[in-house]
Image (tube, rainbow over all chains, first blue to last red; front, top):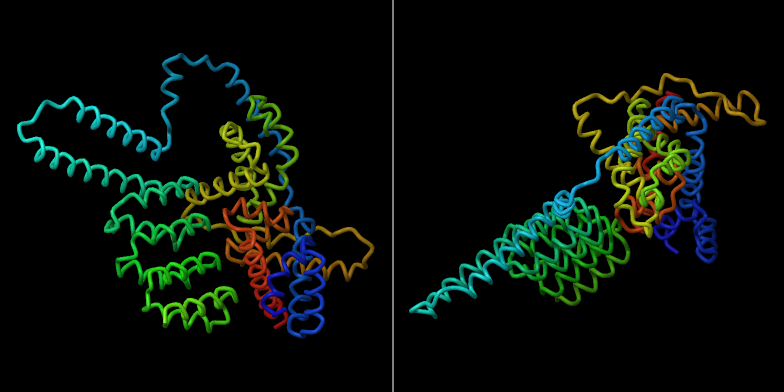
Length: 275
Length: 180
């Protein structure tokens, strides 16, 4: 076991959630490595003392009036619910309309497509059908693309991770030359708080791989990531795109002790593939 | 919570009795302001009442409650942006003596160390402080914390280790300053 591996096991060791085999391996390592022994002892003591902080002071106990305020609020809320008039049928129908802008936009988009479809079906006969159909179709394509772009960007900015995942899946439907969606995807890869969303965004970047901007951004993003899983996915993407420009950065990653051992190994493997 | 979601809002009182102290401890550890923390506890229970229909019974209630607590905290911080937070509000207060068999000198030293540790915790960046508060003060499992923070369990463990290491560095700096 290496020192880095031992350190990563410490949180489980402290919370007593480590498996018996790992516990034994950790204790064996700590007993033989002076540096890890000192570190584990110091941090372990700190971890124990942390739990004593709330009990050491009255600051962490709420005031007596909090309970009274809560029960007043609860009673008022119950009274409000009981005295509220029953909603009319009209109100109930209106309440079905979603409040989230993303859903509203989605329904608006669906209605637009249905409207265009109906209009297309009932249109009058045209003396030059081929030419007119071509123009209409290209207009329709442009509108659909614009709507998809709006939906994708809007969903990528939602608070809910599942909504942002839907935004990523919408990104597959826009033109690969769409720089606004590309920029939103890159922001998601670098800044999204949810690792699943980041991973999905990395996959979606594949379609935008022809752009040099995308490739440079992917190379720069590896170091910004805190999760090895995303770092590995970015390296895989560079291999898929056969991005030889990534070699110098991959060499640096493979040699950087601060980076996760699995990621370093993967960077070495990628270097072999790209050369 | 499932019963509250089903319309029996009076059952919220049971949840309040069970969780309000832990919630208060979370807020006060994060913002160091008792009055504000009490307002936030009140706000969380009100939000749980309002959004009771959105609670998914397959989800951990604690994780859901802390997700609401974090949102309430963020909204409050946005409202208070620009105000100076009283970081030393508690520093002037003396901790109450703890019970136990140790002698007075030992108790006094232990309390001094805990006070120093709390000052170190206050100086920790908010994200690191939060993960330690959730795991040590709230006794939440790493899986639950991952659900609250929207990240992987492995990432939580890595962040816990980093936070403890940063805390230890700050603690030692403060201890050196004190003895200098």
